[in-house]
Length: 222
Image (tube, rainbow, N blue to C red; front, side, top):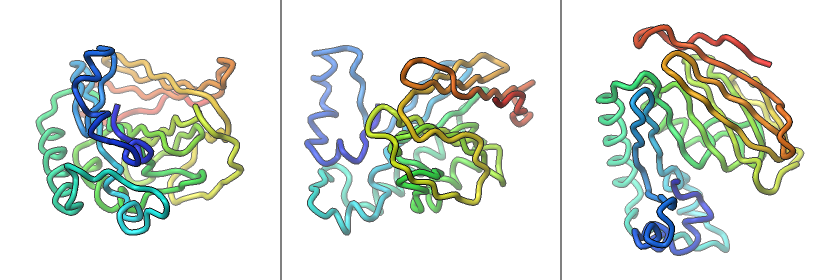
């Protein structure tokens, strides 16, 4: 996993300490990292430092910026490394994952810093999907000017916010309650399914690729 905004409000270095893996080998937490699963590469991105308000208007919160400050240098290096890694990737599917939303119609809405700084890197490198949490809901939004699909799976905590604020992209699905998302991939197809807390299927969506050089073809949406 990567750190979210609430993780940065505690002792961030403690969560990143390798000793945690000695306690439970399933525990993997780093600022940014890549998982190469041959047909797919997952690019985990540290999105919290992008949010300027956490630095300038933290209110009553204290953010642990050790190893991050100064912000501008950290973000510049992160984006440079990310761009280089994505360009080198030969995976058929490329998926970016961060805590914060790029696009969302719920409580937190769009993250302007990610739209300005991160999204151009994702677009130029042909990223298929961006998956995030942060907003406590389930969402699927399609970009209108690129093949990127945005998925929010943050319905494991406080939900039912009652907030809806549309953006410029196309909303495919929105559920303002609790639930979770699954993703199944093979060489040719990606299948997303959203469920409510009882396991009832709320929404299905699939994308198919016929070869490495063709963009995704969206084949089902329910």
